[in-house]
Image 1 (cartoon, rainbow, N blue to C red):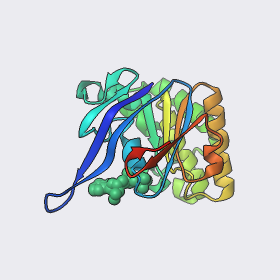
Image 2 (image 1 turned 90 degrees about the vertical axis):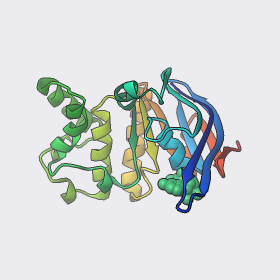
Image 3 (image 1 turned 45 degrees about the vertical axis):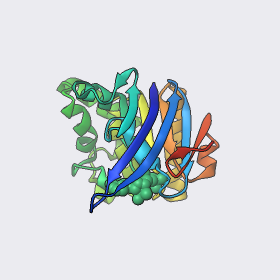
Image 4 (image 1 turned 120 degrees about the vertical axis):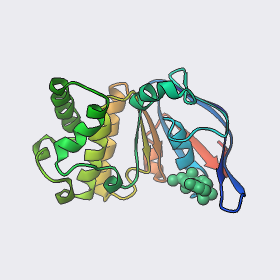
Length: 219
Ligand code: ADP
Ligand code: MG
C-alpha cells in the first residue's frame, strides 16, 4: 500500500544551507497493517509522514501509494483520497463552524454528490461517536472531541490508509483512549494505520514498530 525507495528529503535553510531530514528511507507497509513510527524529536517522523500522501516529495528516491508514484501530480487527487493524515493539533485542521459542515468539507471538495455526502458524514461521525454533536460548534467541544471531528473529516473521504502524526499528543487520557478505540475498530475493518507516536503503549498496539534516528531507520 505504501512503499518508499531510498527516500532522501533535504530542507533548504535560509542562507543556502540544506538539512537532510530523511537520509535514505526504504520501507513498505502492506494493506491492513498497523505500524508505529517512533523516534526522538527531530528524527524525521513528521517529514516521513508527509511523504505518505504527497504533501512532501522526496529530494531523491521515490514514494509509491498503492503503486502510484507521488511525483505523478496528475494522480494527486487519488493519492490524497487513498491516504488521509491527522495532525497533532485539531484546531489547525477544523475549517467550519458546525461539526457536520467540517466533516463534509473534504468529501465535498472531492466532488461527492449531496445525497452521498449526507451518508458519509453520518457514517464518519458514527465511527467517532459524535453523531449527537453534529449541529454543534467545534470550538465548544473538548480537545478530544475536536480531534475526533478532525478524524471524522478524514474518514468521510473513505481513505484506505490513515496516518496519524502524534494525533493523541494534546489529548487527555480519556481523549487518547477514545481515539485508540477508534483506531482499533478501523484497523479491524481493514484500514491501514500508520501512527507516529511517542507513547510506547500506543506503539505496542501495532503489528510493527519502525524506529527513526536522525533521518534513518535504525530498527
Ligand atoms: P520529528 O517529527 O521527528 O520531530 P521532523 O520531521 O519535524 O522530525 O524534523 C526533522 C528535521 O527536519 C529536524 O531537524 C527539523 O528541525 C527539520 N525540519 C522540519 N521541518 C522543516 C522545515 N520546514 N524547514 C527546515 N527544516 C525543517
Ligand atoms: Mg513531528
